[in-house]
Length: 158
Image (cartoon, rainbow, N blue to C red; front, side, top):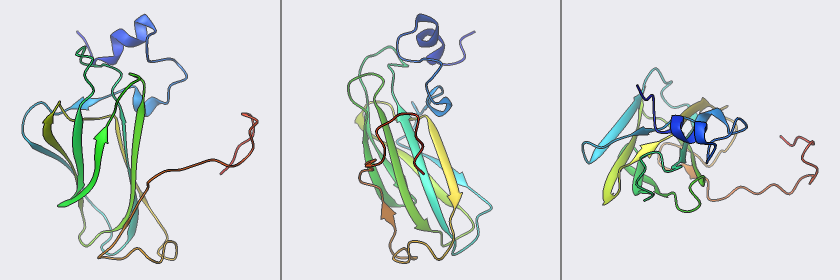
């Protein structure tokens, strides 16, 4: 029995290597329905959270057609996910939001350009003092992150 599309890739050594971050080794696809949501419960009303969604296509379905689909936080468009070549390309979407309820929904919406999928979804609480511009009516969305730190791969920058 096949666990997921990554098993064949790992055995053949094509896109998945032992060094690949674990979050990218699994994938969940949503072949049914136009809108599929995760509801994350037990949150603190009014607290800031970092939401991170990770995607790596890796040709898990054998179709060699990376999909394009929309990602929402509740009813608000977060990002259009476009995982293109190469097959091991990774997309990470991050947002910092204040939650108005004790839950938040993260939804993948099929836009007709392939089956939506997700590799990982993370939620981390943040101190209320950081990112003072984030409130109930506006959040922050990561556009790009650059490392201007050391070039030696053994050095760690946090």
